[in-house]
Amino acid sequence: MTLAAGMPPQRRLRVMLVDDSPTELYLLRKVFALAPDMEVVATATNGREALDLLPQVQADVVCTDYHMPVMDGLEFIIRAMREQPCTILVMSVAVQSFQKENIFKLLSAGAVDVLAKPVGQAGGIGEAEGRQLLEKVRAIAQVPSLRRRLARPAPVAAAAPGQGPASVAGRVELIALGASTGGPQVLQLILNQLPARFEVPLVCVQHISEGFLAGMIHWLGSSARLKIELAQMGLSPLPGHVYFAPDGHHLSLDQQRRFVLAPCVGQVVHCPGGDALFQSVARVYGPSALGVLLTGMGRDGALGLKAMRDAGALTIAQDQQTSVIFGMPAAAIALGAAKYVLPPEGIIGMLLRLGGLGMPGAELAEGRERD
Image (cartoon, rainbow, N blue to C red; front, side):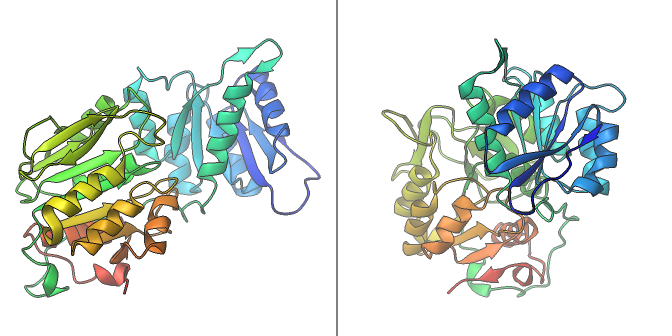
């Protein structure tokens, strides 16, 4: 276990590395040494050492392996979230695309994101792999830790009749959601609070690495009471179901309220895209829809959410305090696309009210309404 000494004051990103391989730590240090905006402030060889270091080093991001002696990465994340919440990126050979169970187990425990460990090449880590690592660390370090962690809401009780904005009751026929980095965790929080009798279909676009979507759907479905599945061309969304856009296709709805899948062509940044879904919902459902834009990097979904609001739909952006990356919600707020800015528990309360199941009186007190 080592502490870096003599580091200059603010404000380079402070990174702690946790890996039982001295060679891997050496290679990773070389990568971070190339980044003028970052510094490695500590290293640890297992989760136990890392836990002891957390209060001292105040790292902005912790990069940890999964398989380690004494305390592995999963137990470290669980303990850290309880004792010293922090921003954790898992970087391991155990989070390849075919290891979906590991990936979503780590995300459930509190990891912000996962990254397949860079492969050592003659004298170091490949340039593209190193760049990907540095970009990932910069992205997830944009907001405070939990300070950043998502709240784990208690079961939401129904409110007395008439609580909350009366104008939102009984008018929503479809809920459209868009999310990127941090989305699987907050989607799990939200979907786990919705009962099987929930009356409104939910249609989701989640940016996720190709090959991970099936694992995410299985993971969400293992704890949610709603039926979670891929959207299929020509079918109509049903109450009590949650639909996801499949890999490589934009998802929209036609005038008969049936799913349309369009293969992504050209240099698209996000496929599937939240804008494509939200814009179609604005055209087809107008004021009888709700749009929710969750945590994520970039601007995808902001223009579509604005189209929904302009069409009379209710619209929500996740708040900054609970967003892993505030890019997408912030872009929507800046456009005037969000009627409400809410944390996950506030979004849950709104969905329960709109699904005919009541709403806690504190729902809007937990967030704010936009003009």
